[in-house]
Image 1 (tube, rainbow, N blue to C red):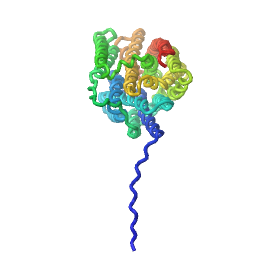
Image 2: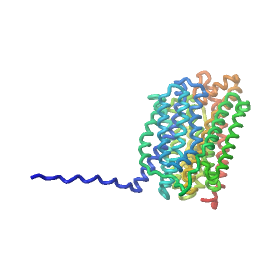
Image 3: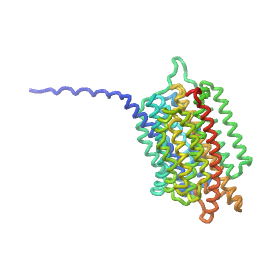
Image 4: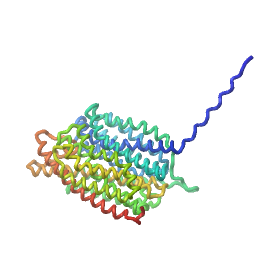
Amino acid sequence: MTTTSPAPAPPAPPAPRTDDQRFRYTVAAVATAALMLPFSVTGAAVALPSMASRLGASVGSAQWMLNAFNIGFAALPLAAGGLADRYGRRRVLLAGTTLVGTMSLLVALAPSMALVDAARAVQGCGAAAVLASGAAVLAHGTSGARRRLAFGILGTSFGTGLAVGPPLAGALVEGPGWRSVFLLVAAVSLPSAFLTSRVPESRTPRSPGTDRPPLDLAGPVLFTAGLAALAFGFARATTDGWAAPVPLGLFAAAVLLVLLFAVVELRRADRALFDVRLFARPEFLAVVCQPFTVTLGFVVLLVYLPTYLQGTAGHGTLDSGLLLLPMTAPVLLLPLVAGRLAQHTSVRAVLTAASTLIALGALLLTTLDGDGSWAGLAVPLLPFGAGVGLAFGVMDDAAVGTVPVERAGAAAGIFNTLRITGESVAVAGAAALLTSLTAARLRAGGLGGGPAADLAGQAVVQGRVAPGQRAAVAEAFTGAFHTAGLLLAALSATGALLTWRALRPGSGR
């Protein structure tokens, strides 16, 4: 007698993901991708002195390691946000994550600074895609209390990269070497890409019977060219002087290109990537202008304090990263707190307080001392970090929350374009300003014009100071920071007043 085994049952279809699962995947994917971005800035800044020395880079090529990334990062959130709305927010996020990781691997393997600069330019484009599409993914995939939680986690992720970045990069540079800083970013991109692949896709639906308008290529090209001309102008002003023909010509070209960009976008109307109609919302206008008063000074300190501490104060790479913790740790801790504060008070109160704290920190930069002690640095850096931490918890949500959800990608693109543009201009402009001020003080001390400019450039950009010149350079560089602090304090105080006025009750929120 034979028996027949029953046929195996067909596999059960996978259970649909619950709302909780979709929320967890969405937040984890965006937060992990966002973690790479601040570390790509802070880690590179800390690693730059060692990288420049090992690759034999000049002051100019070393500065372009930062500028190249920032130009792509600043110019393309606009295009990335529009592409995300059109072709898929998850798709653009995955492409950006992959690009950041791949280019970071290429930097880690690069034999020359020229290749590093090229890879960093492409990496900045990938970072722009992550920034714009990540915010759009959160805006479309969450709402209400969950949206506030998601954007609070996003702010915490940025804060983690900022807080952990300098000391971690310092430890890596002093241990395996500067290349390991970029290998780490490449490694983080792998789980980020996996999580992103499990996020639900979304895009702005096309009206039945209508064709998609052609892509707006002229706008991003003009905007990128304008930023590049501005960065080149700052670089030449450092060596030629601010009133020399070449820098003035580059500045004029930058203004002309940006004006042409504005004309092109206005003529394209509802087909433009830069949707000027969103600026008719007073709250949106107020929020997108925040980065110029909130993060501008912060990024200047984040990029140029490590070279100051390593070159003039004589600290090691790891120590210089640890000394930034009074500024970076609050950016890790405060974003989630800021969201709750905004619920109990208002976005207006939180953003005004943020700008006020930053103005206070900038004013206290006049106490900066060449010895670079932890206590002396904590006095100005703590208010800076607290102000930026509060702003990070509410800025992204406020920007995308003031527009219809189908325009979230465009809103995120505009907001992040202006945010990273401010940071890009700050990094390039601060190098020129700090170098010029330092060189002027060295010349006033009796040093010739050429040697003074060389010493100032090496100290500000590369963190390198000849032992015999350390005292003079330290005094000049410290004085340059004092002047920059006064300028930043005036800017942030103005921003606090304008924010309080623009977001008054009845203006939209």
